Every structure is written in structure tokens, then in C-alpha cells.
Length: 270
Image 1 (cartoon, helix red, strand yellow):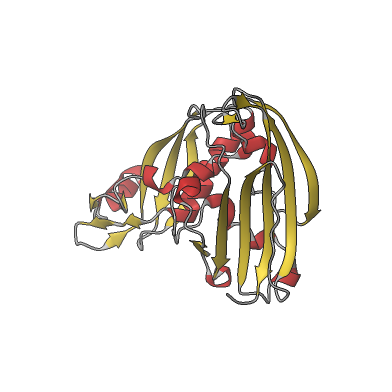
Image 2 (cartoon, one colour; image 1 turned 120 degrees about the vertical axis):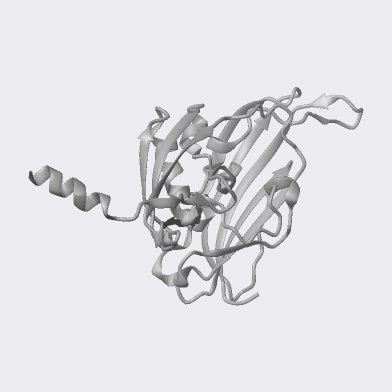
């Protein structure tokens, strides 16, 4: 008798007639190349992650649950981390047209592409991170290097950049902007110069030895200073295994040395 009453009470609630759906039609679009966890790349881990997302009546994520593991804890955790950070939904509605809480399920595939021929041309990416004190941070690629980032001028933070301010010391809090600069150079180690009013935060510099065919033969971190947040991709973990060969003065493919630099500083003003 009790179970029948409970069933009857449940049936009187209006059921959803319009399911929740991600803004943009799919969760796939919120994932960026830069979101691939560095440790998963290093171990060549790939796979699909099934997630169940709980959506509140306002269309915001209230929970993310891994329902089917990829076999990689790093990929599983990163999937829900990105969903929490970026996913937005059109909320479900009941028969009266009122927004209601609901769930949404999808599988996200993580795959490592062939990096044969990765560019060996020097590049610089400079992310300016701001407004993290008021919620989700805002990001801007100051240099607009679309060839290096694939999303020049974007205001959407890559996952590995968005969490940087929370990992920095209290001494950076008075500064309205955090700068994350990434440089790849050939022959000489890159140097970053910033204004005297800016505050140095951290640096990691790695040396890459690449043979005449473009194959990476060694990578070694040669300098670490200050604070480099753990979510930033580590140089030797994310370095491509192959690069476009470079030629010497006679036009023949030649081995070369490259450098990858991550530099962080707090900016008082633009």
C-alpha cells in the first residue's frame, strides 16, 4: 500500500516534455586541444569517457559523474573538469513550460593525433588572464598567434590556463592580470622582458634536441624558478615527437636545438 501511494505521488509531478540540451548542440565543442592532460599524453593514453551531467533549472551544471571510464584516471577527471568549467545548457521544461532540473548524457572521445611534421618555426603565445576574482576568468591571446593556438583572440580560457590564478601566491592578488607566456625558439633560449611594475611569478625552460629527420631525441628542463602551477603543461611532457626538419646553409636537413619556455608574471596594467 505504501509503495502504491509513493508511485501515485510521483506520477502527479509534471514530466519533462523538453529535454535539456547543451548550448551549441553537443559537449564536444567545449573541448580544446590544449585540454589534453599532459600526463595522459606522456603515457599515450586515449579512450572514451561516458558522463552523466546534472543540470539545474537555470541550465548550469550541478554535478558531473563518470558513468563509463576511459581507463585513464587523468582523462576521466579532465572530462568532468572541462564540463564544470565550460558547459552551458538550455534547461529542460515540464508540461507547464517551467524550467526544471534534469540530466544529460554523452561520451567524449580523447585521441592523440599524428604529430609528424609539427612546426619547427619559432612562436610565442601570450595569454592575459583577468576577472578571476568575480567567477570564471577571462582570457585573451594578446598576440593572436592562430598558428600556435588555433584560437587567436579567444575570450574562452583553455582549461590549463583557467585554473592558473587559483594556484598562485597571495602576493599576486593585488594585480588585475596574470600573464602566461609560452615560447618556442630555435638555436637560442628565448627571453621575456616585462615592465618594472610587473611582478615575476615563475619560469620553466626546457632544451629540445632534434635530429636531421625532425625526431625529438632528448628533452630536458634546464631552468625552473618561482611558481609554475601544476596544471600548466610541462615542457617535456607535451613536446611533439617529431618536428618539420630544418635545413643548414647548404640546404640539407640538419639537427637543431630548440627551447620551450613557460613564463608567468602579474601585470599591474596594460
